[in-house]
Length: 290
Image 1 (cartoon, rainbow, N blue to C red):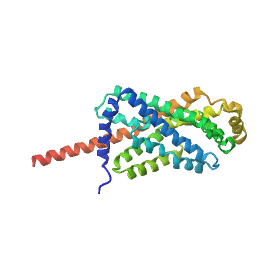
Image 2 (image 1 turned 90 degrees about the vertical axis):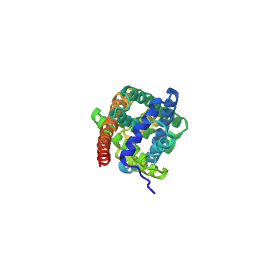
Image 3 (image 1 turned 135 degrees about the vertical axis):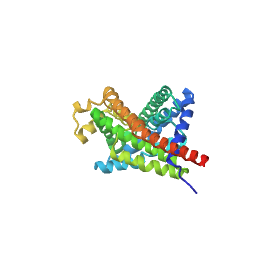
Image 4 (image 1 turned 60 degrees about the vertical axis):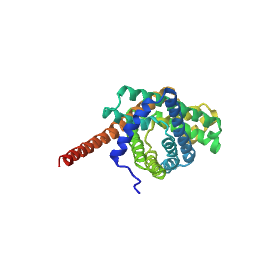
């Protein structure tokens, strides 16, 4: 039994599905986006729990990478809307099936919904007492992760965002190629594990990571633990704020995610798909003439 679709078919199916995304009502699209943001945040939260006490950087990232992919698995199987994956909608504009205005409208609403969902989970995690794990070390670790993200240079955040979404969108395409649930889950797991282990920047995941770090930074115990355990100075800790969240990280990472998904993967997929379609049409024409 054939369990795999061709690359041409996957691209065609995705482009056709864009019509359904665009026709969704405001409320349904928003709810799907909020749920997707929450699902990614659950994966990110579990990643922090798994890695917060692991000292080796590589092993710490690998521990996080083993659980993080569950977020995208839930999104794909429930049909929710994730901003990074939806950057592939640019393929429908490249093939002149949808207007750029409609795609931008969907992306803006999905981005806002993802932000709401991820932020709600961050607040929920803090209220649940999760940050108290390991005598408050998880709260301190949340601060550490957020600090690292808001102190990236513009170029680091941009390029890391590009590399991240090449892989995330590749996971979406591979999941679309699989005809059974097992195949979809395997495709998602290994590709997403790759990007998390490599430490690339995902704007929706960062909506959880940085929000949770901001929340933890207002707790004196977590703050003191971060100072003692990681050797931060108060001056360094003060670089974690809403301005650095949105300007230093979310803006360049989101821009990078768009470039990575739409241009670095979407454009080549459309180019290759259209080339193959033209070959098929030419072959069919020759056969008809013969």
